[in-house]
Each structure stands twice: as C-alpha cells, then as structure tokens.
Amino acid sequence: MFELAQNTTPVLESGRIILIGLAILTFAVFLWASWLRMQLIKQISQNKAHSEKGEEHEHLYSELVEHASDVILRLDRSGNILAINKAGTDLLGYPKQELIGQNLSKYLPPEAADPITYEGSKEYTVTELVVVDKNQERIQLEMSLRRERVDGKTRSVEIIARNVTERKRFEAQVRQSERMQAMGLLAGGVAHDFNN
Image (cartoon, rainbow, N blue to C red; front, side, top):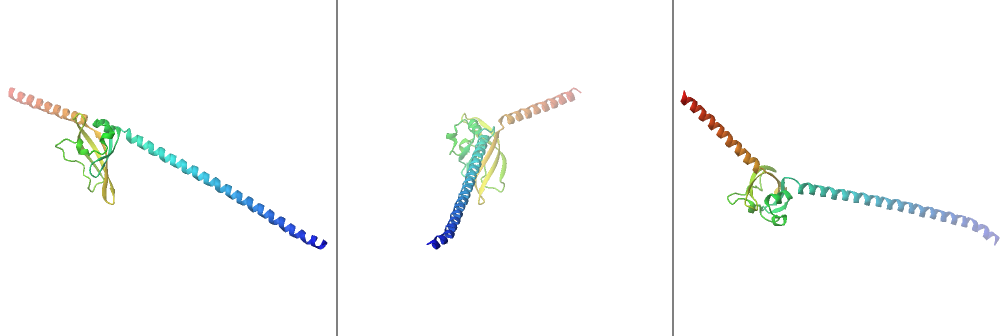
C-alpha cells in the first residue's frame, strides 16, 4: 500500500497542474469576454453618437430649409407639391396642409402655360414664374430649378424661388423715368431748334 501512496503523488501533482491550467484558461476566457464586451459597448456608443450626429445634422438642415427667406419647394413629375417651406406658404397665403398635394398650376395665372419643363438636357434651369396668391395678387418669382433624375428620367423637381415683384416694379419705374427724361430732352431740343 505504501507503494500505492507514492504513485498517487505524481497524479495529484498533475491534477493540480491541470486545475491551475483550467483556472488560467478560464481567467483568460473571462478577460477576453470582458474585452469583447467593452469593445461592443464602445462600438454601440460610437454608433449611437454617429446616429445622434446624423439626426442633429438632418434637423439643422431641415431648419435651414424651413426658415430660408427664399421659397423652397419640391414637385413630382405631374407638378404636384410634395414639400414647401414657410417662405412659400407665407408668399402664397395658404397653410402648408392645403398646399401639399396640390398642383402648382392651381397657383398660376389662368393665361400662363406651365413654365416648368420636367424633361430636358440641363439639370439646372433659371427662369421666371408668375404665381397668384390667396388674395389674387400676382407675384413675380425668379427661380432656380433642379431636376432630380433616376435612371435618366426626372422623378421630381426642386425649386428655389425669390420674390422679385418689387424689383420688377422699381425697374419699370426707372424705365418710365428714363423715357420721360428722354422725352423732356427731346422736347427741349425741339423747342430750342424752333426758337432758333
């Protein structure tokens, strides 16, 4: 029996080594799992920060468009209003809910042809447009139009427009004043020639 006890010592020693090895392996797995968990938390935090930045950027862009002093609107291929900012609703005198879904031609003078070309080789076009507001006042707009294309076909049209009614009136007054001045000079010249 004594012999047996001597032989079990190496077995016990190797069992301790195995247990220590298992403990070290378990600890290593625990460390790796903890590191992996921290990396996952870090990645989730970064994704959340990027998402929040994206949402903040989108919100700031939306605010920029909504509070721009120029009219900004989007039309579908048929000319129906898909989106319009506050400057557009203020200009036309209608609430946004009444304008969305309406065709832009409803706000054009009866004699006006649709000035918006949905097809064309140019992506951007600058032109003028006359609209009629809720009080039936004609408003002259200078507009920049961009066609949004998908597979070569126009899907929608983005318009940025500025009210130039007052500028046009002032230009007409200046032209009238220049005509009157020219008539005065002509009449003065004729009178001078007549007197001589």
